[in-house]
Image: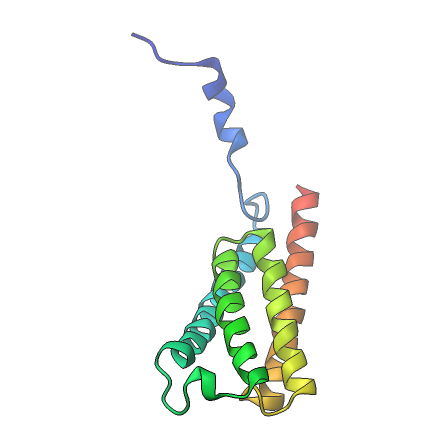
Length: 147
């Protein structure tokens, strides 16, 4: 019994490739996915740290914290984990949600000092990550359009 289907002849040309044509071109799409997964791991750790404050506080329980700080803990506990999942999946909504979460973190550091540990170092790291994300996204889009 011959199970060969004519559509199978074109199947190899329909394979999805990340990056260039395989002729030595930089694979910016692959770099972007790896970057997103590294950031996902970092944001997963941040989200789990926020959940530790909620579920197993070492100092003060959540209801003893000032309302602004308690709200920030809950916000980042949820947002960071959902953004981490979206980044790990390399979904467009993951990048958008991560940008929202990191922008909120930058806002908290800049306008409400003392609510998030790390201060200016964390702010500089966040700016660097955002710039890197946009640069990799731009190069991956240019590479995709050239194919």
